[in-house]
Amino acid sequence: MDPDEAILEVEESMIKCVEYLNHEFVGVRTGKASPALIENLDVHVHAYGSVSKLKSLAVISSPEPRMLMVQPFDPATTKDIERAIRESKLSLNPAAAERSLRVPIPELSEERRREMVKLVKQLAEEAKVRLRAIRKEGMDSAKKMKAANTITEDGQKDFEEEVQTLTNKYSKKIDEHATAKEVELMKV
Image (cartoon, rainbow, N blue to C red):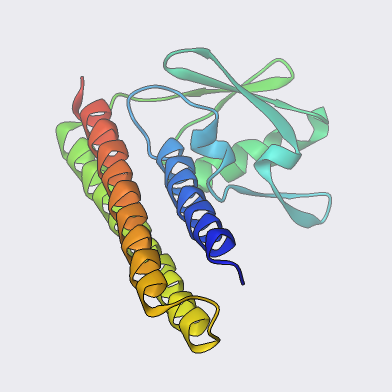
């Protein structure tokens, strides 16, 4: 493998790691209603004799800052969707409206905000673990390229330094995203 391709591959993996973390953060509840709150989490609906994800059965929108609107594609599944949201770990209480469900998002208590901050820190740490695993793969590929005489010993050192620089860069990005999410959570 070409060293330039290998570095691009390492950086691409690190970018995906940070993007995945941001995707995870969307599901972490702040005081605002976000369709991702129920669409990304595992809200499983028992309908049509099988189990489906909520987003495959309905359109989820946020018409107001503290309200979600769930509009089933088939009105016959409204009761099933309502039950699934009510029984989820989110502790939400949907109300059936005409051909849709209104899901009010309650204000977060101080204690719940602190729990969410802990969750954000945990998600950020898991992302850093994935980042370190990508770094290790990069370092291993440098050793393999050296063993295969694709790069010189100096080339291997340069490659490893570049991998470490990328690791530091994306680790810092993870910290920045986590800090921003914590600030968002603690803002009343």
